[in-house]
Length: 222
Image (cartoon, rainbow, N blue to C red; front, side, top):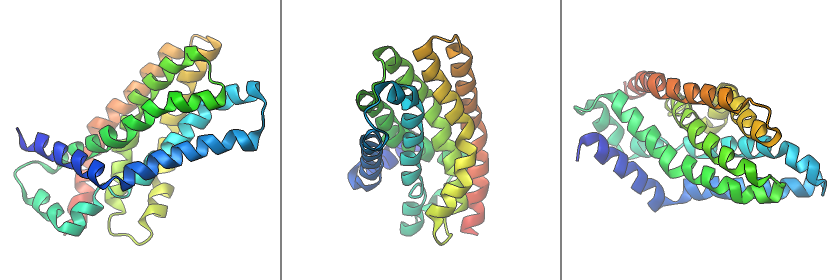
């Protein structure tokens, strides 16, 4: 197996063996979506209208909880210095680590969303677009979030700083992710354009973010 594949496999296994980051993200997602209907009330029509927004916002916040640990483990055990000095380009290292975050955290959150949609009276017709939009849109969350994780690696209260830096950058993904699901509910004809723009955002993030992450990591290890 290539060095890239080994690194990807290692990071996914470490994330699942530790369990803390994934468990926290999934637990937060379930708690938020479970408690919100209690606060909003029993109005099923209202819950249906706001369901896409609630599911997407809660997913972004849940994914953000685990982004702070993206490079911290490697910094703590010294493997970050080894990765920087290895023959594998640092941009490829960034891709592997962000992809591991997407596979181990964002994908489980996206697959959990339809179950939580039942609590928000989400129509059955919207379940497919919901999962599709999240699977297409969450790579942008992992890769853009990786930039913030690299920049705040040695910062005190890095989690708070990471949220302040990244939440504004997640807004385009959030807008078109919500619009994709909402258009499927009301059949507005905006599903196609929304999913294409969401795909373009994720593709641009996958291409451009590793360059910024690699530059930030080089600064951190100097």
